[in-house]
Length: 81
Image (cartoon, rainbow, N blue to C red; front, side, top):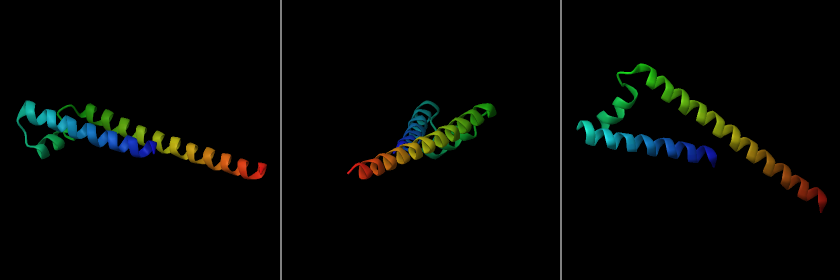
């Protein structure tokens, strides 16, 4: 669930940035989205991609730990009965 929330948040923020760029720079929506990744400042692209990758990896790890703890607690409940 954390991973889904992270992906949804990234997609919605990308759409929001695209909408702002459409209004400010009078691009079409597709041009605005393409310009997010192919901006003039190359280091900004790497920072954004690294942050997204790091967030995705951490959200997958969090989901795995939540799943393991739920499975363990269910197994503990079964042994107590």
